[in-house]
Structure formats: C-alpha cells, structure tokens
Length: 175
Ligand SMILES: [Mg+2]
Picture 1: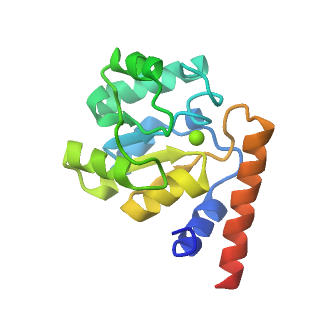
Picture 2: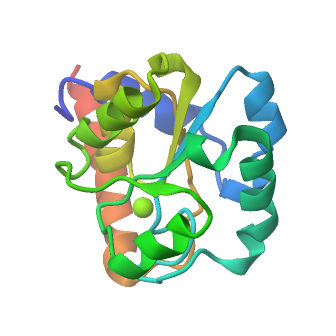
C-alpha cells in the first residue's frame, strides 16, 4: 500500500510546512474550508507518546473545536485505545474509535464515515505518521493534515519517522 500511494504520501510530506503542531491550525479556518468532522490521532498529536491525557496547551484548541464542530463530530483515532483515554474523551462527549483494524488500515476512518454519514471530503484527519495515519487517509480518500512536529518523541519514534520519510522518498524515486 505504501508503494501504491507513494506519490500521494510524498506530496503530503512535501506540501506540509515543517514544525506543524495541532494548536497552530485554526479550527474556524477548517470550518471555513468546509470541514465538518475532525479525526485526531493521539500519540504525538494530542500528547507525547504513551501519555494518558492531552497536553494542557491544547485545552483551548479542543474547547474551541467542540464549540465549533460539536463533540459528536470529533473522533479520536489512535492505534492505542487505552481505557483511561477513552473515558477521558467520553466525559467531553467525544468518541474514541475502537474495535477496528489499526492504521494504516482505513477501517477506523471508514467507521467515522459510517457513523456520521458524511462525505469523505468533509472529514480531516490529523496525524503525525506518514505510514500509518496518512496512509490510512489516502486509502479512505480523506483529507489529512500531517503533524510534522509531534510532541516529545522517544529515540525509537524519531528513528521511525526518519525511516518512513526515507522510504517514501525512495519509493517516489523508483517511480
Ligand atoms: Mg501519532
């Protein structure tokens, strides 16, 4: 799948400004673009890897998004659906997508399409991984924002990110 979508993935990578974090993206600008549903990755995007709760500096961003889009139109799509995370978002009325094949399978995004009944183009996924979230978005034909400056990374994830960018660029070179 990475090979099939190599050109699209490279395009996502090249077109994303460097050092993008979620709170630099204006929820109202997204709304103006016609986006109605937000799908948020957790690790790297909402908090550092393995954390239970979103980073406090995102409080305003999340509150504004809930106000603009409605909690029922915001979904958490993480490959680590921990019980505490699920419960936390539930208290805000935000669904955590569970019981689906992990990204890059598009199943989680397809579940969001099924739950909301919205057209693919009305959904935006925010993810810090090219070969999981961004690839899933390509397969599900959903717009994606690549979070290029994720929250604190462990050396393992730094290597992983380096590797996936290298793979995509190599594949694109092969044509
Ligand atoms: Mg992530």
